Length: 217
Image 1 (cartoon, rainbow, N blue to C red):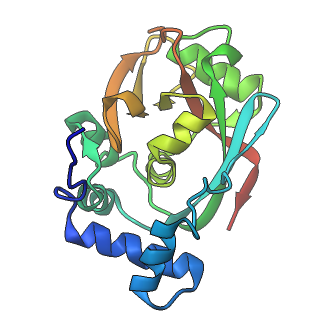
Image 2: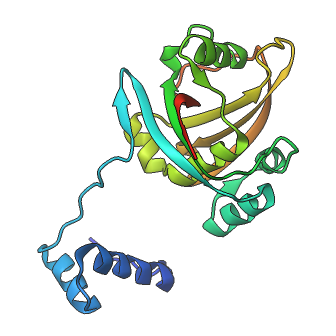
Image 3: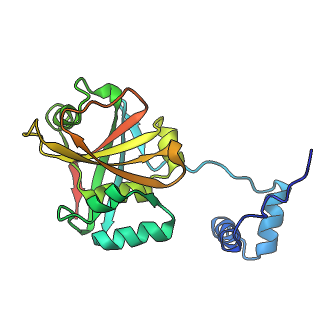
């Protein structure tokens, strides 16, 4: 087997961050010793404890707003390397975006199978009326994208997380959609505009809403 210098295309800054993380998490102050212990197998990597929980086929976690404006979120995602399409940028920069600071919101993720009517309108109506969830803001969708890595989404059993914004009392209206696809490459945020009655296909989709009893300042 041909031996490959595996870090040939890894940026030095990312290697430095990796070693710093090892030192921080182990309390070892010498970087060479930290690397030696990891390479020798005296230190091993394990999956972090999930920062979400599953109850009754629903997933729960929370996000806290930092006070970023829409343009600041665009710049933040750009610096983070998040791939965004133009519709996602338009939704975040729209007049519907409202910024808050220090507000913690409980998030609920429900799978496609939880819903009878799988149109955008039907999912939104069932989530709010049947499951007593609340609609999310555009800001909260940004917070979820920032918190949930593709790996975390996949460990939940999903390949997509979707956020819907629209008027549930207008069946002929439009819904704005933000979402993230783990199969399109790591760290992306896409946007689209859908008719309220457009139906979603049966795939591994998680639809995100707010927890009615979990909003704190």
